[in-house]
Length: 484
Image (cartoon, rainbow, N blue to C red; front, side):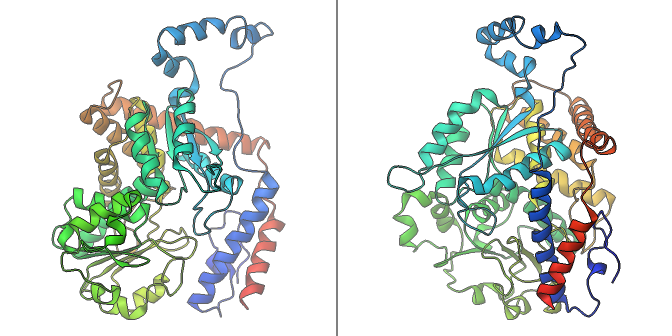
């Protein structure tokens, strides 16, 4: 065992060498949860509001507030688009959730989602140079049931204050209606990161995994375990980007999706799932055991594991099989187990395993790109452009079976992604203003460097204190105790 460094980079070495791979994976999960609990209490959250304008003297208060600011109000009144120039609206995102499906923990009550939503805001700022506000709302109606119309109404009411909206952790089927209505009826981009974000980054991983495996997307057989917002959107983007729906099988909690699923057909709330019933699994394969035989790619976003995906299923897959098991916080099968059963490439949603397929490399750049050209919406083709941008970036710097997509430490990926998304928004006709690729790239680079520099300066000056070493040690000791 080595003493755990403050930056946590030697996390695996800090645990006893006698731990089995399963014990190590379990210990890391316990450690990260315990440290998160203590660190959030220590810092009292992750986000604060900091002025972006100076106060050279007393009379500047009269410029930033009354009476001078009256002119700003009347300018915006006469042309609402001026609000993007004269306020922070043009770089501000609302992170909206009713917290009914928080990670793998289900309904956590509205306030229970604040830690996740603040996390999204933190990553948007640090990785994308985008300001964001966590807004957790109570969507329950008088009957006590969560009502998607309340979220729709809320977002419509607050949209004049923001440049974009990031929907998060809204349970299905409400998430489908909320996104589809707001995408069409709002005048700013409304993005559902659990759906479009996960789909974008997963597609990027699939693109590069198939390159390494020497397979073409139109030829491979896909099995998607889970048919919620994430996997249904992943299926849609895969098909749009060339996958053959006839070679694709999806599974929900009641079995496979196919044209005879009357329960889905008869429930109009699940229209997105019904679309896939009509286009995928023409052979009506019934069980996942059967579907996995000679499948090339498994994408699982279902129940946290381990052992949700069985070893024999992986063993039955095609040569050079690709396994994405991305449930949080524990993947449906641990990577070491999938590898032992013959998987060629394994990806999860966790950063402490190889091949983290995580939204964090997607939404900061995508939202930045949309904001820079003041897009009215984020189209599926913009999400696909982001996926190819991520895949291309990784391929140029080199990919291998344990490194198929960029990671959050590769700061230069985000301005490239933002610029590529901005260009696609212009091409799709949803941008209010036009920039060149170079202009978009330089602006994104400048804003991201500013955000990282500000965080570094606040840390160096002591305004943001370092995490106490004792807090890290306590979490490590707790994890070892719980596993031994």
